[in-house]
Length: 428
Image (cartoon, rainbow, N blue to C red):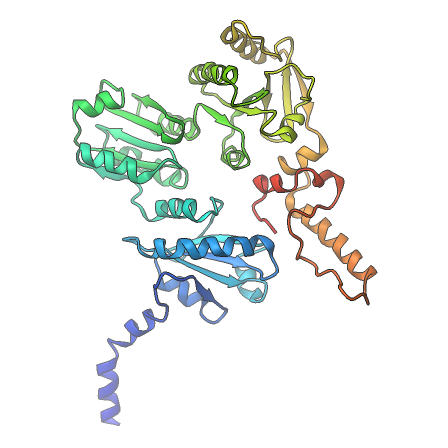
């Protein structure tokens, strides 16, 4: 008996380390189940979990992206482990974390879950998740440090650099907007850096949009209210091209959208107009300025009463959901003096010279989700059940839930089903 106690005393310091190595961080996606899920969550500071269902088409397409991202993320200084669990099979876990669609993605930071709505391609996923393990505010000590920070941050997110600012000045807002941007303060920098980023005094907060080659400077006041307003307005570029991915960026922005519909975004005339829109956006930061080409996204443009014979460019103000406003006598933008026409459009809108209009039913189905995507899925499920009952006894019955998103149900959803992903928190 005494010998057994002695052995236990010797092994007791070792046992925790054996337990902590239950999961190998080898660059592979961990397959979790009900008995080891809680242990996995508590074993890692950062663990990204894919709650999936084997029959889900979106889940099947996501799986190889996670396989590619896993070795990169596990090799970070602060590793992010990727795991997955069959939430359809392990319903207790699914119920505990309110999983009602597949795939549902969550990142657990020190055991606390946060919903993930970011990109799902492996390279973008890596960029996004790197932000969760980075410091809330990076401290940059030199010009080379500033350059390295900007290069490492990449072009997917806006970058904020406080010159001559104390870390504490932006720390609270950096935490609040961490999923949307990179934050840093530069403690030491030269006049060359000031010239490079085009500011001439400190303190100053620089906002960079590398992907759009845009930047803006804020000289204060540096109270939280004014700082937050500047950061919030600088999360988006001055002019945002409308794409399915970019529509997601508008979800958290409460400003109305000055939307310009062009014939083709790539035409020289369109690019010149976009420059004028950028200037107007700089002077009217209470709006988001966006544009879309009819040739690039016909279905989207048609929701704003635009057809092949509509004179373009056309401007409207959109609430981001299911309502837009036509400005009386200022819809179409003529070729001459377009800057003045944009100014007049904004003046008339602010004066209330508008006609409020509702979007078409098919558009609101995937942009504003008047029924909500969950309701759509319930309707799809009910239709599938009816079909299943009607086809009992046939050789190839319909398996509910196996539909690929390219197979549409219902006229209202049919034309724009894939784009519905923009406003849905869950995909299947």
